[in-house]
Length: 329
Image 1 (tube, rainbow, N blue to C red):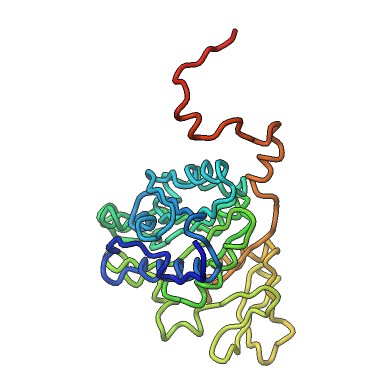
Image 2 (tube, rainbow, N blue to C red):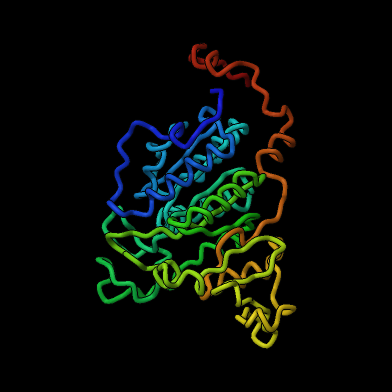
């Protein structure tokens, strides 16, 4: 395909079917826009999904796609990336799909640093199966499977990512067009596994669970938008900042107008700082929280393979060839 593409060029003819008001609509628009702006080619792009509301994504993006089984999207995507390293492979998964039955597969994709762009839609609930609590649901969450309130401690996607050895972790909000565009662009250029946690509103089963920091009236005080090498400022007129509190080994908000020198500067390569930012409850850290380059899995795999994984025949020759083999003793 030649010429300048737009977001519409990545839209399929399929009717997009999520619940009215679902945050997935906004994410879909941001992703198709990001693909067009990055110069991606539909014929060189693939979306792999598991099970859940988010897993419908491949039907709505005019690229290659595969709707796989529950939790196995990272495993299928790993095989695809190894078979064709030139493909731009995206994984779309929900918090239940990725961190429950798919937790083991996600762990290995991250630790191996497979060149995948992994979008984790986190709405803290199972939406497709009618509202059971998920691995990220907070203690006390009431649902059909926990009518008295969940007693399970939630998984932190960010801590999971860093604990698995991920080299890239970012956060975004479904309706934050600017913030989403930034992290998608950064993930697109990262050489390895990039995991983006996207706070996504489930309007039916867990509506406004993130309202404390997504409500329009709370944005200034409750959101910290990170940029590498820039001071961590937030609040009205960016009058507040974060400093490191050595007495509690935590981050604390301060008046940035009177303590300018104490405001921390964001360093994406600092894993200790990343863990503190992930745990920060207010303001909520958004943007690229952690990034450190390392060799990607597919490059290392091919470099160490004795033949470089070169095929002696084309795929079509194998398919049309004889269906029996002689095995020598």
